[in-house]
Amino acid sequence: MAFRAALLLLATLLLVSTSVLSNNEEEYLLEKDTTYPKTPVPAPAPSKAPVKLFTPPPVVKPPTTYPPPVKPPTTTPPPAPPVKSPPVKPPTVTPAPPLKPPTTYPPPVKPPTTTPPPVTPPKTAPAPQVPSPASPPMPIVRSNKDCIPLCAARCKAHSRPNVCGRACTTCCVRCKCVPPGTYGNREKCGKCYTDMTTRGNKPKCP
Image (cartoon, helix red, strand yellow):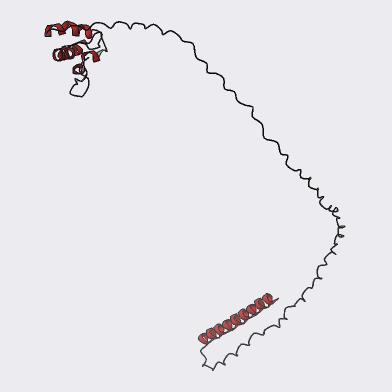
């Protein structure tokens, strides 16, 4: 309603203003065309103020009152019947068994110990002595020439017979002895043969 009233007011204002302007233009044109003396033109009447239409106040709707929500009645369940606890039996006290007096046993009687006579073992004849196997005879070294064949026999089973032969010849010349066999028996030539060492403190004589 208020919007329509505003549109009507604007339309009436436009019509009034256009009619006034058109009247002024016609009078101006007529004055130019006529040769009559100028007569005072009466001032245009002031345009009437636009009449405002009475707009009724908007209808205020009364607030709609809704009834309060009705809650359904809460049904409380019936109280559960009390649970009867089983009767508690008092603890049965078992009487303690009667204490028996400790039984005393007499000490055991040891029989008299009889020592048997000493038994002498029978005399056995001593076992006959078994003669030890005869060790090979020591080779006789009389001169330096005797060392060559003796050292060749000594070093024939060695992995490096030439090195063994040179060391054996040196030991034979100094100690005048060559052990029998291809290995071992070094102690038979005495400390001269066993204590001789190399520069690395290793046994020199094979």
